[in-house]
View 1 (tube, rainbow, N blue to C red):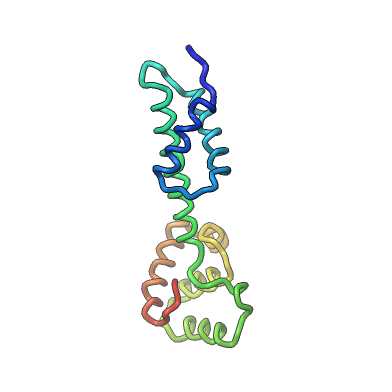
View 2: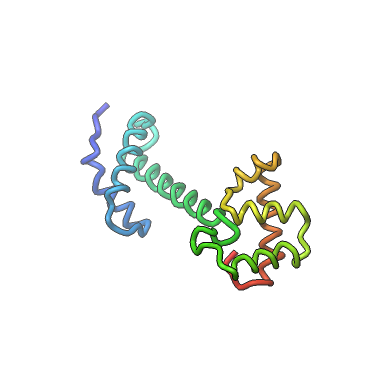
Length: 155
């Protein structure tokens, strides 16, 4: 069995990064690629494919999963803008008051809305309310649907 070095697959790494339209600089991505390379060395089976094919395939899927998880995280962070962005202004306070008292929300929905406004994540809300994560996600989705027609804010 021959020994592989990261320098031998460096060009393949750059090729994969360009193929995925990942912008430069590549410093952090090269470090990630090195970790994938070490993982591939442990798992490689020469009977199944060439090492370079195996490595590029694993690297591509690693980056794909990385960006998919990042997209999920950014899209599910908060329902409303964080109160830290602008300190509570009178407009923000009035908007929150309107949402809570004039939009026909249940008591549970109001609690979830307030926790989201305060910056709690889905996991933290579920833990604090002692309910499942899927219940919080479903409630937040209903809130988005109910409140999206009331305000132009990006919910």
